[in-house]
Image (tube, rainbow over all chains, first blue to last red; front, side, top):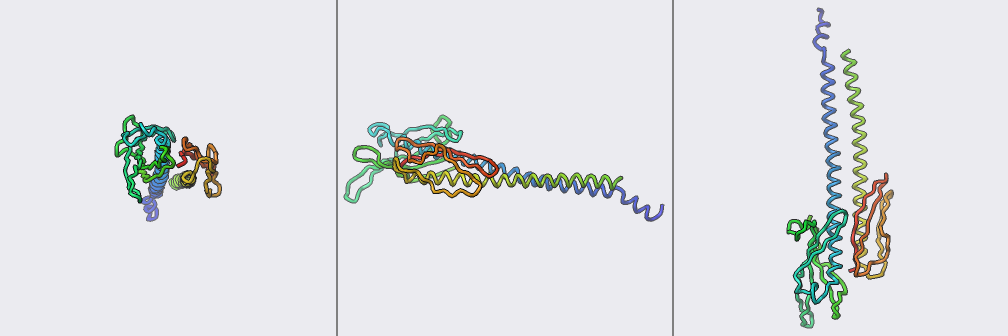
Length: 164
Length: 112
């Protein structure tokens, strides 16, 4: 066997090995790109779920505020009444809202003591039981301004926290 | 023979790579449109809620909303009056993105 023929014999299969290396490299790049696209889409879907949950809880609290506004001042709506709950279905989610009175007293500039009817609302997924602290999605404190007739003239949102 | 086989393997791999890159570009574009839709949807919802905060019963409920070109925002029901204090109102806010993809959420507004 002459010198050039020995060289050819030695290089046999080299191009196939190079081709396999190329396939492996391209495969790794494709897998990386695929993982990136899958993960970004998965994150977007998760964030859309969070958005739906937060707006559902937000809406449920708004509906609860409207209900509490018209409760009987001498009964369920009085400061002596401890608490209540309501449920709403929004954005295909069932949300429970627990509310409790946190009435306070303030002194006016003229020295009169005035009762402040404040209510704290806590919204969570409706699991058939009161919201626990770590389940609360939205918590809000609302002040119900009351006329001497007993009617609520306006509501003031004192705090509104989105917790998850 | 070996060279022919190598050229075939590399050809198929490059074809697969090019079509894969095209798919990734398409998915990236869909992702971008989806994220933009989400932003437009949240902006529209917040504009609606903000408008409701200034409501008095029976007054008009007007939202100052700038919608990016190509997006269509709709409110359903499209009632432009503030709700009565006794009734909170559920409004479905929807956004149709360029390409026809639709996202929607329901928000609740009430007269304070």
